[in-house]
Image (cartoon, rainbow, N blue to C red; front, side, top):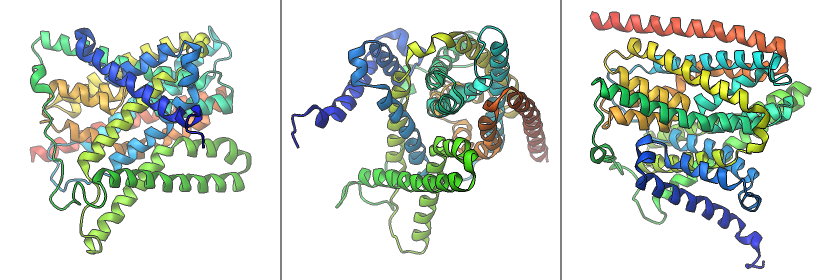
Length: 461
């Protein structure tokens, strides 16, 4: 091997450049008051810088689209695995409404999907003839689930249904969603603060970390192997098992389901790499707990503090890469759909959460609203950022709601995932999907109100 060859250094150069721009973005955020007060995450700033730099062909050849999309795809799954491997505390969850929060999350996906589908169907008949009818379904993926899923399904729509620029469309929706979460969220925070309805804590108090670094029964921080090496090994091993699982299911789908398996099921399976990764991580965690109960294993190997930090790193870099991967030239014919989708997505999300949060979270309405608005226009990290503005020590149950709602949300949202693969086949399929989504939205809100009423009755007794 010739160690002076550029190919040997290429991965280091690419990763080093990304990290250097993250550091530069962090300096901008710390030193420029307007950027700092906007609450725009450093990762979003770095992603926008890469997006602008990639307009230059020379820079674009160094940080190419395939690299950035690959980082987005894999780091989404790896981040979910890191969070899923965390050891759950055995404590009573007082005043949490986890199932209702999961239902609200899916209801917001549904209303985003409904308005998004209406917009793109209308545009396909008027100003953007030839637009994929079902492309509006990318709105809840970009806003509600972040750049990873928006990229996955944008790519599927592009490759399977000839939606030109689908991947960039999804990334653009997700990128704008981050800005909506921060800018609209901060604007509303300031309005409420001026009205005296909330108190935003001083900057020096806001970011005091109070984490438990290690539990008493865990493996040592450094022994024959470093503790963080064990965490990375657990994450990557879980992802390897997830790959084998997806590969096996894909083989079965293409073998026994013919064209449907090849063209619909297989892309769907690979697009849900983060779900399979999370499931495998939960199983790995369960196996480790079983070994401890049987006293085959005496120490706890997963460390929540390190897994949190690794998850944060993976999600940060995923956001940087997802924004940097956008090809602006591919979006020239899609500017109008993007503008309209983000406007109706923002308004519908804001209004729906304004209505439902006082009902479900009467004792911490604003904490509930900002956490959910941040998450359902950006990601869970932006939800936590906004939540910390009104609940800096996470004293309300909303942080717990936000973390634990994922499992009921996955169960509730599974039919929506199937519709994402069904709708793009044509206008009739898109209209049928629109009807099903509307029915589901009504049903979920009926469920939320019924669960809330039952909970209030139990409290009154």
